[in-house]
Figure 1: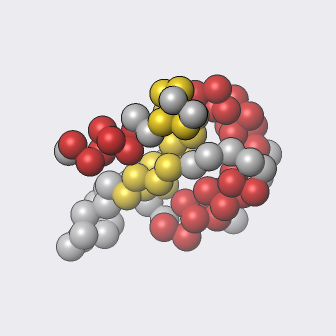
Figure 2: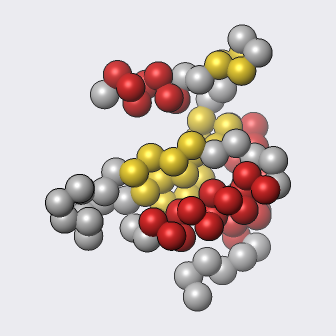
Length: 84
């Protein structure tokens, strides 16, 4: 669990970034597409794979973005239907 806390408290230019969950899915490819689209817009993304390694139908993949980019990221995600 310590490594998880280190990821969330990444520092950039000595300023602590506060992360906020912007997207959740059970589909790895969907998470990759959404993360790639956010990154192409200049938004930093951290991916947490909380899926069970033995039974991949259990658990989720969460995408986190900096708190100050949350609204912009949410708008970008809502503007595209990833479930088709």
